[in-house]
Structures are given as C-alpha cells and as structure tokens.
Image (tube, rainbow, N blue to C red; front, side, top):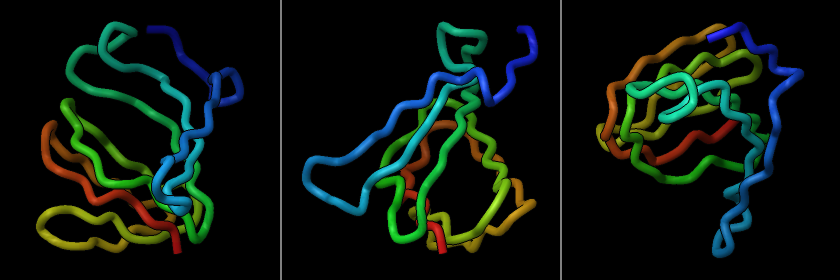
Length: 101
C-alpha cells in the first residue's frame, strides 16, 4: 500500500441518534477489503465532552494518541490515555469507547 497522508483522507462525522455525546470524525487509512484484512488504521477526532461510544472491534487495532488525552473504557476497566501514548488491542474485545479529557 502506498503512503497516505491525513490531508487526503475523506473524513466523515459520526453521531448517535439516541446520545448527543456520541459524536466524532473519522477517516479510514486501511480496513478489510481496502489494503488490510486483519487490522484497521483509522483516524479519529473526538472533541472534549464527546465520546466514541461502546463498540466491538473485529480486527486488531492500534491506538496512537496524537494530541490531548482522556480515558479508554474497556470491559476490564478504564485506562487513561495521553499525547504520545500507544495501545494495541487484538480483535473482538468490547470497547466502552474513548472519552477525551
């Protein structure tokens, strides 16, 4: 796969119909059927006071916190995240979502 710059990503805004705090922007660098089958590379932007929302990942995910911080909520408990942090997770664990601080 050729290198991709974030400035060339098609970004979309995602919102939940039943929770006004679930709101984020994303763009997909790679995912199943588009440059990857066992992992996904996704850009997320979550504003303070908003969150990603609970979901299940089916492929490996590596989270790199570029700017800001907050908490990553997993079934086994909340984990703090901050600028420069990296966390890798295998597929299928339940996610409580990310919440910026």
